[in-house]
Length: 405
Image (cartoon, rainbow, N blue to C red; front, side, top):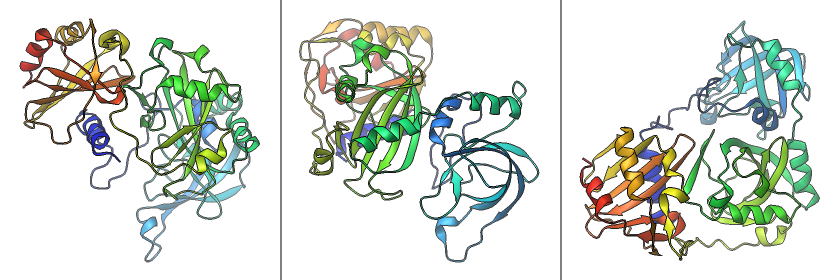
């Protein structure tokens, strides 16, 4: 990974003051129903290979001597009450771990979202963000199962799309949901999207690029701009967890319960490619992308309008001297937005891997997406590295930054 991109991602993930993803290798906690990170039932239906309402017969540690991959895992025995997708045996064992996803307790009933275990026989939890649902004050398990049964799964249709174009689909990787940008924002990538699995790793290019590739297989992203969307990702050609360079992944975008987009990416930074261009994807050289990219707005930009900064709820910051914090006062946030609400000429961005102490990192968070910039207070230059440009916002913005401590 390019040092510039690594620094930018580190800022996004480590200074956003959001809950820690990992702490010394600690496990993530599944998203509870109704929480901001909780997926919709539709996304869970597409992600799972098997969905079953079951009773937990027993749970027990695996205690496999010498198997570090299973440390902390539990062997969960489930008794099937009702299947909603595919079928499950009357009683079967699920290996839950090493980070427990079902969080199962003996004697309880739950709805488990499972997938085929690529490392061996049987089934395993789908993983984050959610692998199990339980009754809530508003919905019983029977009601949840009725809702699940009413949803038409789209993972089979997505799998067929890849297979028709010569790809071997080996497993599903993950699913996430987010609000698509407005059509006017399709040409920019700097507004990072927050999904149910965190920032979107598969969509770092401008949306217009994905829309163009999707149109090659008859899919239309543009008419769904602004809609709530689901991104479902598949392992292609190689089985998990083979994260080797050159591993291809297939992505489909879903909105209004239909496929609206599809493309291929290749680990580590290859693509995106058309689903139809298998040879190009598999033969792509392992070349790191230039960072920052070429200036995507050479004719100037109004940053506040282009990235919808008026929706900002919190501005997180980090200073070159090591200070960090957040701004939540609506008046102060509005002042920052207003200072960027003017059309400014742009220049090609240059990323400094060793920034001076006069550097500020600002992160505008709307709850649905975030927008990160780097500001050099000595020279008055603000850089939007992901879209390849820099601007000089002027004394009003400089004064606001000077008040940050």
